Image (cartoon, rainbow over all chains, first blue to last red; front, side):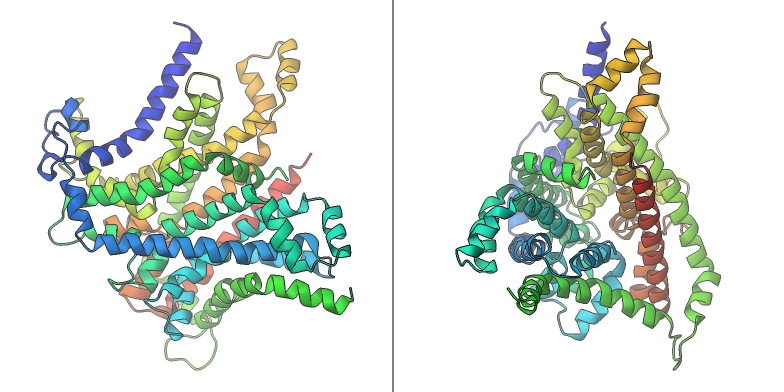
Length: 274
Length: 283
């Protein structure tokens, strides 16, 4: 057997091992709830392949409180991406194009401050926002996600590469800085905006500690919190857990696969080559 | 344009992000420092909260558990990610698909991976079914003080290593082929090629992965809070859960603030040290 074949076989084996837990989630979500643990005493093909397919778990899921939690997650993440892109790209624009004394200092302070890990300061921030009655509000959920140092950094790097002659010509033509930002820079930055948007989305979609603290009320509970509480209720519904896991993981997975090449771009620039 | 006008325009663009930094990062950080210096029912500043947590066996245990966790999980994840990057850095049919399968778990939110692995770790769950089917004894996983931390390491590594792999793979693909050709002329074997070309060329992505990975692992919270609550016998009481537990279960906010300051300081020191290392490795 050639070395090449051995290597290919190892790659396929490793990839399938990584994929196995995900496959198990999908298989369990799509089989009758009673079958989830039924085929374990003797491992066979039916352990991981449903011998009977059903959508009952998904239907039950949508008729439970979980539908609202998924809606909350989608709404909060979409708002975070929309507002966050505006906030981060306008800051990145100023840091990349407007020359003013102390610009490097502002940039350094901003990047270093964002190095303070958000989860680590969740407790003091929770006490601050609770003081302003932002507990159990969408604002409380969205606020921490909109300022993202990585997104600012990424967009600034991209804006720096736009030739400054374009900007100078536009200024001579009488365009304001805002018009240059809105009508020239943003339309030129589709790829960078997508990867920054992806960073903002993933941060918010995956958040657990913060929504657990700031929005425990059923009306504002997000999906990541709701699924963890499924598993600790008195009568655990495993069918619902797997169906929920399939949804909450499936949405970011589809987005990541669709935007894969933009991830590659952001990976390259955060990998510290610039 | 007058300097005054330039400042106004720049401030207008920077204001929202600057406010976000000040209100959502710096203020809470400053607040924890200030509150951590006020002992319960005290009216003046002191280091009482710090002397209290550092002499508290529960907090000492949490620091030790966190240290043990980091000393195992960081080298393990970086080594596995590097091994995976080397393995998949090749051409074969469908290589993009195989890489994606390894990378996909990062899309799963931490509370979801914790929940589904919690089901897998059940005594009558699929993992024990697999163990017994190949003739091994079933394990206790999350209910054993000797195994629970490793069970959590397994979860966060399944999620993380494929992600770290992508950074190292990008680094590998940036190494000029000519470097390998040069040492091959000198008769270097596979190990020497790795030792004298690959490793030095990967220094920057490796340092970056080590920094980012260390910070991420300091912040592991969801699997502990969802699956073990720090137990059994405090064996999984990682620092993030310890702070949460102090503040919200025991209601001891002052000492939770002190623990927050300890955590943020350690993370910042680690980040700054590792960035220094990265700068020093500039050619």
